[in-house]
Image 1 (tube, rainbow, N blue to C red):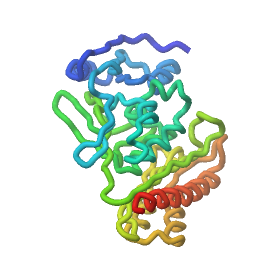
Image 2: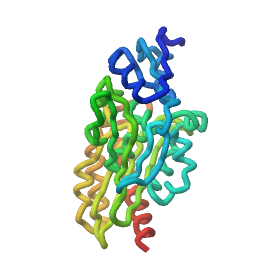
Image 3: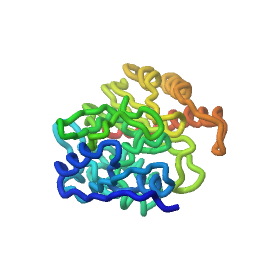
Length: 291
């Protein structure tokens, strides 16, 4: 299918892009790598009057550690994360996750920030951002806004981003102690959307869990932060009983529906199993850092 007609602009600076966005507002759509937007255009699920291509903007594709957080530019592509040697020890869950993203063609063009802003409840990065307590940095002509990932997703393909804002960066807080994470995904074939996926991240203080994050993919109208399960972990030693209870609470937080990928009950049980598996992997990695 062909998309509806639209105007196209490729601004040379962020200032120019923001001015265009303010002028056109809801009539415009931002495109970075295009791997989420172009299919929506072809299916006519999105019919903007103007597509603003920010893919050539300078200095927005960096990945660096800065002021206690990991900064990932809005134009950093999946393949940039995949090939970044520092991320293997700075934030290994990102490297784990990127291999689950579609196929090499999409990873070579698509961006992490674009995927998060697309807000597909079956998207992988949204759950990882929730588990990591990440924030999105949004710019408009009126200034900069820091938006926590928890609360960013409002519904399927809907976020708190205003029509005049562009996400320029994702910030992930660096752990203060030994930490580890894992991303487990069930898919029908390689490159498919998730039937269920779970992101888990833990930080240790001594023998206890100081911080925990759990994000759920494809089991609700948005990526879900399993808050009750996180609270059940924090302040406790990671015994089998504690881990089993957290997995149970995470499954309770899931809101799946019966569909061709499986029943709601089946998906809830996969959440439980993947949280168990993810926590054990994450704790093992955190202990390796500690050692």
